[in-house]
Image (cartoon, rainbow, N blue to C red; front, side, top):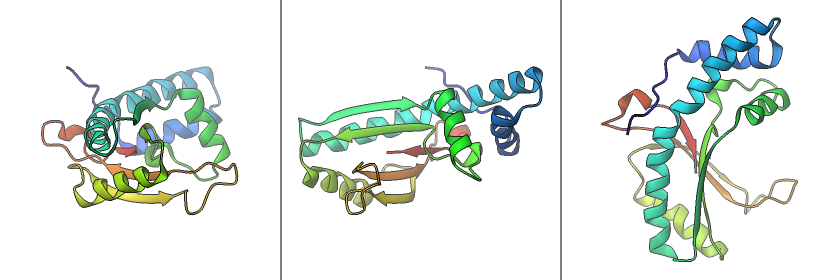
Length: 163
């Protein structure tokens, strides 16, 4: 399979995120959209790799696990950039995301431990425990943010994926 490669510098990606919400012309917005779509599509390869690793580990814990993945859609990216003061597109950690949904909280912690003890090739960058400290909305879960590291697809190295 052929994966989309990032074509633009992180600086250009950051500027395109700014232009997405503050463009002064249709032409500027259209150019920003091209860069944003490339950046978004480039996350598919690391997302696929981490989702595969997640699935393998999660199924060792429970056969009742549900696995899903998604690339954040452009309207959601735009909304997050507008809501989050100082957010830069090139540093957004959830352009690509995958999740394992278990019937029991204990299984979530078992998976977290497994992902940390025997991690995927990618580097664990950040960890958030919203079970211990739920979000104001009531959302509960554990988020692990990985910096992709691949040998075969090294052009994607450094892209962030949220598990």
